[in-house]
Each structure stands twice: as C-alpha cells, then as structure tokens.
Length: 306
Image (cartoon, rainbow, N blue to C red):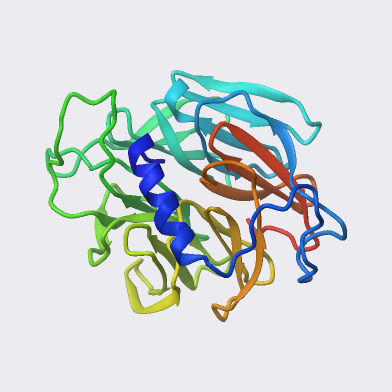
C-alpha cells in the first residue's frame, strides 16, 4: 500500500509499462487463456473500505484481508459472509498463513512483523533491527520450511511521528524459522514491494515497484537467495502464484505471466488501483482481488497453492 500521491504516480507508471494490456471492458468475458473459468468476470463483493490489501487464505479457504487506513483485518468466509476478524490490527498490510494456521502480518503501525495465532494471540516477531525501526514491512511470504521473507520499502504514513527512515536502503529480509535472526537477502532494488514464492520453496518472486520490474531468485539451503533473473518488465504491488506456476502481478488490474515469464492474460478491474490478489474458496479456485476501496472475486480454472 502507498500514500494517495504515490498511488497516482504508480498508476501512471504502470499504465506505461502495460500498453499491451486491455482496457476494462465492462462485463465482457475475459479472453480464454485456459486459466479463467468460461464466461467468468470479476464480481464485486463490497465497496465499503478505504484501501484493501493483504489477502491470504486459511486452510479452509476463507480469505482474510486488511483495510489499513481503518486499521482492521476482515474475513470473507467460504459462505460469502463478511466479518471483522480483528480491530486495532497494527495497521496490518501484507499477510500470509503458515501451515499451522498462524497469520503473519506486516504491522507497520510500529514497523513490526507479527504472528497472530488462531486464537488471535499476537506475537511480535520483529520489533526493530539493532535498535532501529524497519522502514515499514509491506508484504511477506512464508516458505514451506517456515522462513518468512518480507519487503521493507519506505512509504511515509500519516500515523508515524518520524519523517525519514532509520535504516539505509529499502531491502528484502528473511526471518529464519525457529530463530529471531533477520538477514537482508536483497538490497539492489529501488522499492521492493510484492513478494511470493513457489509451492516447492525453490524460487522467490520480488517486485521492484519503482523500477518497473519483477525478479525471480533461487532460494538456497539456509534461506539465502541467489541467481537473480529478470522475470517481467513490470512492477507489482502484491502478487500470487497458481498450481501451474503462473504469476499474478497487480497494479492496473491483474496481469498474469507463465512461469517462463510470458504474459498470458490481463484481468481488468474497474478501480483506480489493484493492490493484491490471493486464491481462496473451498477448492482454492476463486481469485480474490483487493482493489482500492473494493474487493472482487473471480472464478478460475486453475487453483492456488498453499
């Protein structure tokens, strides 16, 4: 999530980078590329928020997402019911469930990383790095072995008293499983933002939103990254992957790339900015889309991965 002025700038930049993407076409079916259900279009669930972000699904397929300006985490159940999961939610942004049902959150009210148990017990995993506040944890992904990778760009928040970062550079970090050891793993991007890994834990995708590119890294034993490769000439706010290895990037709608980095689809969303995506539903075949003040859902042929 960005400030309003930054959002406008990003939207403009993203439009320049996606000249091949189709414009919103009302309720017209999306072109058949083998991933979207036949005749399906994005369906509006609600437009009752200030800025939606951070969608992630639990084991049952319920989707949790944030409304950061209003400091809430919401739940969209597999029964179609919307409810508040947590109020005073640390200004949560990106989130992700681990295999034990714990909800990890980029809680940037105090620039922390949280773990929220199924009983809503909050554990602060990272409060600072050597006494210095993180820039503002933005998005995260938990690997199959339990390592937590997160991006740490600096977006000035209205609820902060500070006006500049305490840590030089905007980096990607990993919190190693079973420890409080935090290691920087990428420090070469202008503004790391969206992040997602593959189901087998072999690769990590990271977006450089300001640089207008997305990279793929090999995840090494021990959690370090190597073999940085340009995956797409497009930045992204949030992102996800499906069971075919396709990667879903966001910004102006949702743009889908094959695992080879070839654009295979563009899903128009009638909102100013599409912030993030995740798969949910009982069969993991519902694409849940957070877009500015609204949330949407789209029936898919492919499925998400845990």
